[in-house]
Length: 451
Ligand SMILES: Cc1cc2nc3c(=O)[nH]c(=O)nc-3n(C[C@H](O)[C@H](O)[C@H](O)COP(=O)(O)OP(=O)(O)OC[C@H]3O[C@@H](n4cnc5c(N)ncnc54)[C@H](O)[C@@H]3O)c2cc1C
Image 1 (cartoon, rainbow, N blue to C red):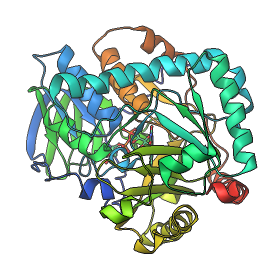
Image 2: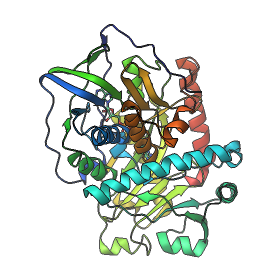
Image 3: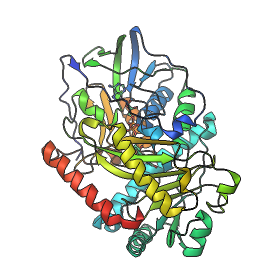
Image 4: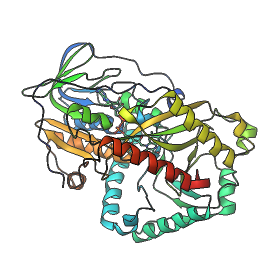
């Protein structure tokens, strides 16, 4: 159970900062003009400081400001909003995450129903940003295809369909000819279409939603919190060029939440990588199927995820790598790009010579037990973090809910999240690193042509 972790450090603590990414994401490069950059300076006072501008932090800031229109809210991010993991993702706003290989996925009906309930709340909140506030993100509610390229992939899909049956979910099988017509690729042999997921351009969403935050939110990018001293009446948070004194702090800094003194050493930092082509020409588009945009999730979770984007690019993600010290290098990105090129050739051999315009990685924070951080961490300190792999819909739901907790509210979503396991302590770092490296290498190999 999620009991409060009230051990707040009272003394000043220097915060270890996020590592800059070696490359920009293709989504970010294609997302239009940069937001005006206003790093924080001098001594600032506010009612609520939100640290981290990802799916969690952005929605926490929005919600807290909506609920407290007279309060001053500051949202800071160490880097550029939209070029973080949130803007680097595949852009599947997933209602029901899946793990058909996990034995209890089919059996855990209560857990799956709660997960769906939480994610639908996140999706509704994201949708309201589009419908009520005019946020621009190439919103496409077409659902997702779970695709198989091998017999064992088809078996994984069959298990997934059983879970969907148990949950009373609608879905349809897409046979070989149809999935080939949709994608133009002879690689796939079967798929399941599951409605409910929305496809978005995540960097566009992050930037546009930042611009449309309520008027009582001030945003400071390139503003890492470098040190904190939690206390009353104000928490003191230092930046590179000033200080922010806040009555409440909400930490949505992904795995870096651990650097603020909470759940220390409990984050398992994992990177996954993606590559995107340039915009395809008319002739090239004729090779990638008859559907203008789509998203394919591999039957095997170590396979390759694919999107054809609404601005006519192909976009492939695969490879997981343990990220020692939360860090990735240009070499890691290049190694992954080579795997993405292999996956491109398998799927579209007539097109793959065009290669990729951009390749990048992004941080996922996992816990040994799949636990997540949520709720009150100390007096007037709150947190939401650890996406465990999927964090778009879930991130929006967590962010919205943690702001509601900070505002003293309750809700069915909050009750579910409070009941979830907290991140457990992993094995010692060396063993975890070796274990993750071994398992990811093995699972990648086993995934075979699903990659
Ligand atoms: C390639 C890739 C594809 C993915 N695809 C999907 C997908 O399709 N669907 C899905 O649901 N999930 C997907 N994910 C996972 C998803 O991106 C993450 O779960 C999600 O972005 C996590 O959001 P967050 O807000 O918790 O963290 P982040 O986006 O990491 O945001 C945390 C922010 O905190 C800031 N920060 C950290 N420390 C400090 C500090 N000291 N001071 C100030 N700011 C700080 C960081 O700069 C960062 O911007 C994908 C991830 C990757 C990498």
